[in-house]
Length: 275
Image 1: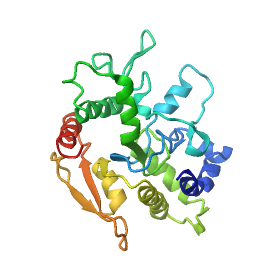
Image 2: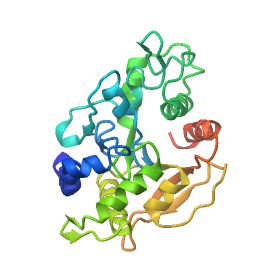
Image 3: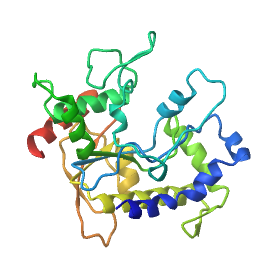
Image 4: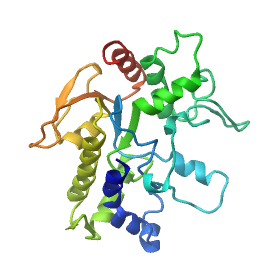
């Protein structure tokens, strides 16, 4: 499977080369936070594939913490031997910044470091019903997490927000670079390139369920509209291409406002109906 995945990843190379060009990098230095496809180990048939729009700036801030020189993280499966989902990394969900103490992901009462990761940990606790289990072997749970869940962003360009992402995509599209044998002439064409790579990945790993983290992620994946809803238990059946034979069971978590309760409810729902 890894060889097939690398074929997907290699299609990003023209973009990676452009993002490494000094003159172009200088033009986007206030918005660009790295290029990240690898957020965990690549697994076949995960229980859940989580889909986001693009990576946040967490890795960028971590690398540049207390450093003078700006560095842009790159995390690719072809250059990485990670076996652990990024959410489980010490200090990612919770960290004592004053005393520089990185807490384990399951230390729920400690200070929150990354609200997104914290909410995904909330999902994990409900999915495995951990709060009601007093005799937890967290090493075993971590092993299950790393074989059950895979997290992927439709666009691997890391930014602080989607507005910054749009700025970078516009600037890339104006370079008219050739990607996958086609000259990219617009932001829409570039977004479709990222969408096609995501579809290839989904076909490759064949997840049991897809969870879109945000209605925009669902729209970017399916090219369909989706009304913001608090009902995270609504099951959607989607085909990613017209000629696809596979229909994917998909849930959507609207990230409008405080979505902490929504992601917790989804974890509970999947625990009761899809485990």
